[in-house]
Structure formats: structure tokens, C-alpha cells
Image (cartoon, rainbow, N blue to C red; front, side, top):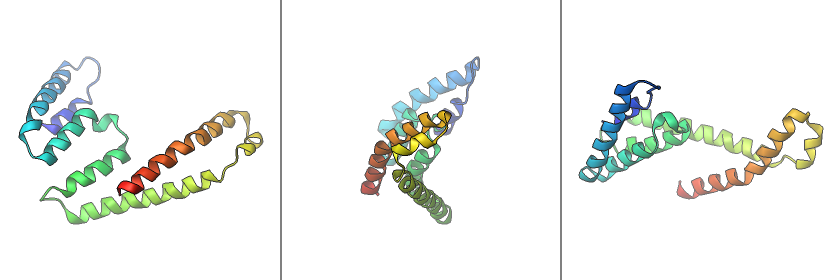
Length: 140
């Protein structure tokens, strides 16, 4: 049912059968959520809120790694590689974030006009990125 719901999110305008499938699966999943295990209910509720198609893949990967780990039939090697890949990318992002933190707003004058907006936007966004990173470290 979860997979059908996810697949239905790939509907394009005019694909009535997929629109009906989406409505049907949403109704069925909502009713199932109260009658299944806590872990499956968590996955159902997550899927109802955030379809894979409309989400940020790396954020979804983190959620699904924790969900997959609770599945008794999970492949330990696959899970280990998924976590390793995720952690390597996290380290790379942290390094890039550290490099960006060294950027100076005064350096904006050395950039071409078309890059100034992007540079300033990125610098303005840094505190929020740092806050998210700190929260992730606290929950990890």
C-alpha cells in the first residue's frame, strides 16, 4: 500500500487513475495506521506527510535507514554501506560549511555582479544551516 501511494505521486495532469489511487491509498493508510505496529505506523504517517518524490533525497535517506534497520529481514551489509555513504557525505558537507564560514562579506566586492546576490544569500543562510547541523549532532 505504501509503494502504491508513492507510485501514485508520479501522476501528471490528466492521469485520473493515479489520482484515484493516491486518494484510495491515503484513505487506506490513514485507517491502517492505528492498527499496525508503532514502527509501521511511523512509516505510514511519514509517507502520508512526505512523499519520496516531493522530498529531499538525503533527508529521506536518513529516515529510511532508521526504518530499514528495524526491519528484521534487513540486509546488514546494505545498511552499513548506506550509513557509510551518508556519513561520508555529511563530513564533506561539514568541511564545505567550515570553508564557507571563513567567507567574508567584505569579499563580495571582488565578485562579478551576477554572483553577489548568490554570495550574500548563502552567507545569510549560514546561521540556519549551522543550527540544523547542531541539532543533527545532538540527535545522532
